Length: 70
Image 1: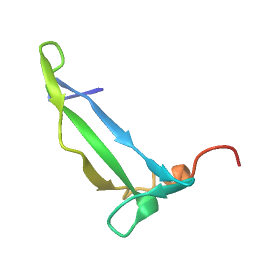
Image 2: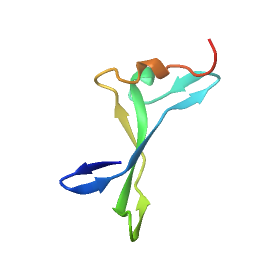
Image 3: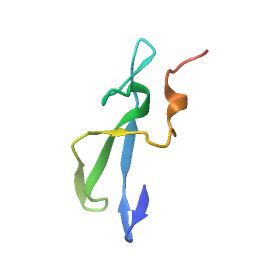
């Protein structure tokens, strides 16, 4: 969670795998991730928004190409 314009913003980034290989979209499997943003009040309730595929333009998540012991 982080503050944006003084309001809390909660989100989760998901990395999906099948047979230890990262799944993705946009022709860039290793450079995309699924993000969900919480919409509404954290105090009074809200809901998780529609999942959106985003591109990892800065390569922050390249280390997550696979999971498990190497």
